[in-house]
Length: 498
Image (cartoon, rainbow, N blue to C red; front, side, top):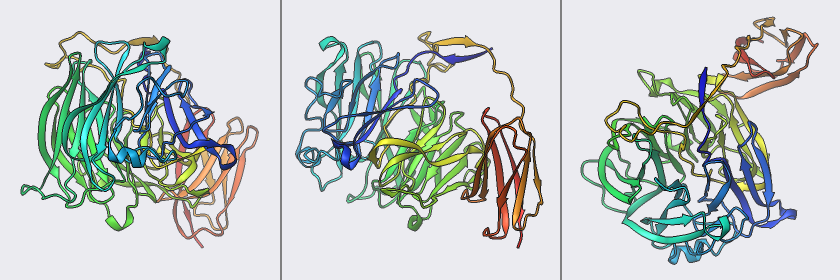
């Protein structure tokens, strides 16, 4: 038997979109629901946009409660929740929130968490600019009571101050090792201010427990750049043991994380080429082993268990040039409840990229560019969603509350046999024939070692062979894969010679 989580579907609804709605311009909102294996996409009318800040929260059963664009909070009926206006109120709010297309200008500046010990209260953490031309200065939080107004909710506390400082545009969180509370992390921003002499980055930690939000101190650790900027992302691994933070100028800092003490350790750094990074996103695989990093034109995979993490880099995808209104390059990434990673572009498009098998090494992770078509345009960031289905650390000194993951028993799935694939000739010259068993169906993909797709064809039941043209392909080593409709996959190398 295996065991899977039965509850805590706080991240089952994601919000995207331009606003106000205009079908002629393909503007409007998109609700992405993960109640089924393949996400359900629903268009909705909206007067606000979500180009930058975006976060939503559902209840434990997966029913949408509310969402925000950093300017206001709306309920599941897409109406302004009571007292939900003027989130991040101030001079920057007047500029950013007057533009109904955009919303508040942060990469990752809003985050919802369920209040420990309550079934109806939810905390929204948010970062506020002092003015449109300054860097982020205030870390705030607001409280939503989802039980008010017959379930349509009310904001009961708003814009409560936590700290005034210079922050990056990112906030993220990880479940405490006791299985109930939450660690919240924000990083200082040293752009336009005097750099600390020790040359280390500084992180601030907060603890959310049944008594409220408490400052837990700061930690100086990891590499600090002289220029910290937007166009980045931070995230924890699904098991809570690792933390990563990156942007287009600094590359990526990564650490081990202690869910009991809330401390970072073992700093590492990925020093990406600044002139080749135009946007950056981060996401860990479901098994927490692989870190995916986008650079605008590339998706890179790093093995966090490798002896040399930097040397473990694999280019798993290169932007294929596809445009949907604008180029569908790579920006932020999110791990979804279905175990796949979805990615946005740093332009306005109506698609998301998909990493179908993120637990697999190298090209076997199966990147599908622009694989999810949306009913309306969206842009830039992904929703900010922590890993809600992370619970206690059994046996740790912090495992003192008797809280364990809600689980149900399910049958162990039957092992599926990998389909047999034969290639001829190999090396290939002008044509490559792929032989497969006639009873299997699926998709054949021929890629180079950078992840660029050169040929692709559907294989149907009854068909024993498929022929791919290699005439226009440069000589070199390629990877051919067959992804069966049953979910199994087989991969082989092929050499093309001319």
